[in-house]
Image (cartoon, rainbow, N blue to C red):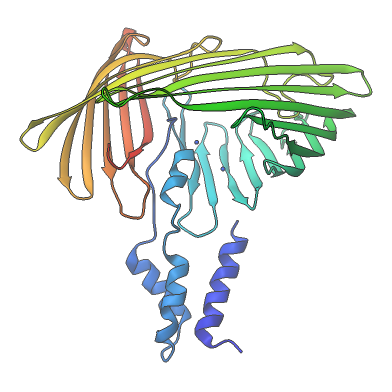
Length: 406
């Protein structure tokens, strides 16, 4: 038999289990205060069972990977489109449940997402359409084994339709003993999709091949350590009734690491090519729509030159170019310098003035960083302001995440 404290623990477990994945744009974390936790526990645990209170308190302590979940947050602060909010904000509980709320002029995005045992869940009014897109998704996607994918979308606006599908298949990782470290994954599935009054079965096959090359250039004297990675994915969807196919080929190549002592760099190239046209159009069954080309590169030199409590931490250059999406905020051609103020452990403040030639004006970024013992990295909220030509401006909210030592 359970004592009352154990019953309270089981009750909290049940509630959290039923309450309910990412640089980009982010927001700051929110956690239960110590006072709030104590009030909740006091309501559940009666006097005489205080010896078991620690069991219940553990349920409200932050999980070990909680701070790492902030890498998936997207903060939204778009003054041009008048939309503000946050996507994928992690709740401070053991279960990986994230909330979504973004205010639009004509509607609100809202909902929950979660991941549990290789399965993603989403229930939300997502962005799109005139009043948002009501969406329910379940995707069981382990790297190998049985797969199940489904998406159901509907609109509250008459005459507005969105694609729906259900798909099941199997993924197999193929070992290549002659090439150590080579990842080869094959996937095949049968599905059924619908859009408005059109619906039909389809097949989906894809192959992935990739390999990491750590330390391809290494020199202990200069402290050089360069890594390289290359991968490619080929996907094909064949619509059985209409006998039409849609194929995409993605290639991703990257290099990163320490060039010499204190100087780090990175470069990445992404290409996506598409062929044919699906019977229900592109981007119907989770296919990335259309061709894409993205180029990223950057250098960062660590100085740590002190001016009393302030030090010039790094100077950095970042370049990003989305060739077919010139209005994306990921486009940049920016030179900056980061000044760091160590306020008091574990807090520090980074101020980064810069100039972005892509947007044609200066920028200023502020980030309040926290280094907690249980986190694998330092993180904190950031605000970036861009001055652009013709009186235009852009404000970006985010979360900065770094290694503890940086």
